[in-house]
Length: 361
Image (tube, rainbow, N blue to C red):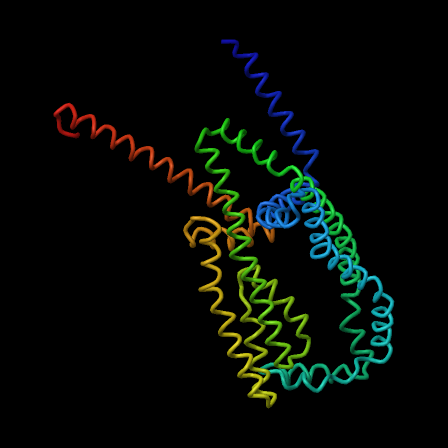
């Protein structure tokens, strides 16, 4: 055995892998997001392709346009709104610095628990530019730097989203070929067990997309409808907050419960009761709809998926929504297979002992 040649060959391969990872590092998150999106929506692509008479290219084009409309366009419009309102924001800051704050809105004092205190603090700065300047001036630089960094970050996010759409289009166009290549690599790496782990990882991604994302969308739609019917101010903004909270596995309680209390305290018990009933239905989705969808997506323990979702979001951010369950699912599968090998070995040994007429040890 030529040990030096083997060692140098392994080191050369590791160096090439490290350099390749370094080159694609700026696009890593975009590639992971694209993979998760394509895996989760692949059945939709297949159904769309069947409706279009088997034209795969047309189905891919429709999926890419849908991603641009549903993902990139809202972020682009939000960034444009920030830029368009920059001058208005500057004028508002100058007005507050020279004239003080305007009188507080009437609804502020009606907010439960803290409303009167907030209204009193606001009144202390009404028409008092000196007090406003004393409070704001030490933080002007930090706030300005924060705003500039976020505006620059919006541009970076848009670029990453466009890269995600581009990579998704490539995966949509050649998804089967890519899947076969990945499964061949996993088979080469771990045999049938490695290939099974790859299939289970894809099922875990699809289960999260079905169970977590679809449930979050359903809860958001129902919450938005309830807030709108109940006449709660800023229902659209609150619905966006509900969606973020549902994705983060916090739930809509932080929005719908204060809104319900506010309706009862503001003299609208009928609308408050309506929102309360809808809130009960929204919360029931966590115990009915989400487990059903997760079970439909993958035959995995529900606790495993939910632990991966919550832990992944807490440790890796939003991308952990998919990475966490995949890691736990693959680890679970490998551990179960490893334990199963021991059980099968014991079963074979016991069968052999009985066939020889002996007694098992």
